Image 1 (spheres, rainbow, N blue to C red):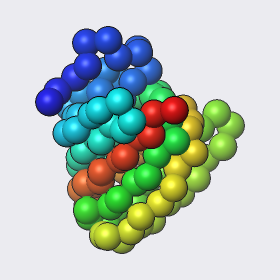
Image 2: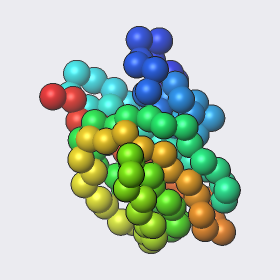
Image 3: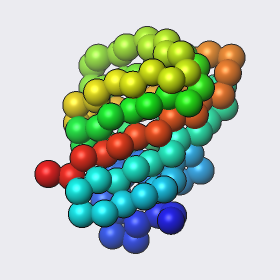
Image 4: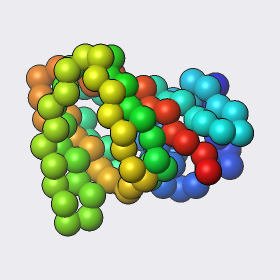
Length: 105
C-alpha cells in the first residue's frame, strides 16, 4: 500500500519510510510491517495503542522521553503497546522483522 499522503509528520511511515510500510488499513485498524538491520536507529515517531507480533527475534533499545528500555524478544511473541512517541535502535546482531496492528479510536 505505501505511505499515506495525509499522515502526520511523526507517523513512522513518514519518519522512517525505508523501515515501515502499511500493509493493510481500514477505518478501524492500520497494519504496519517493520524491518531493519543491526545498528539501525529510527527517528522519533508516534504509534497509537498497538499490538506487535514479532516475526524474528531481536534486541532493541527504546527511548521514550526520559525512559530508556532494553528489549529482547524472540520470534512469534505478541505484545500490547500503549500509545507512545519513541525512538528505536536495533542493538543486537540480527535483523528486526515485526508487524504492528495500530488501533484507531
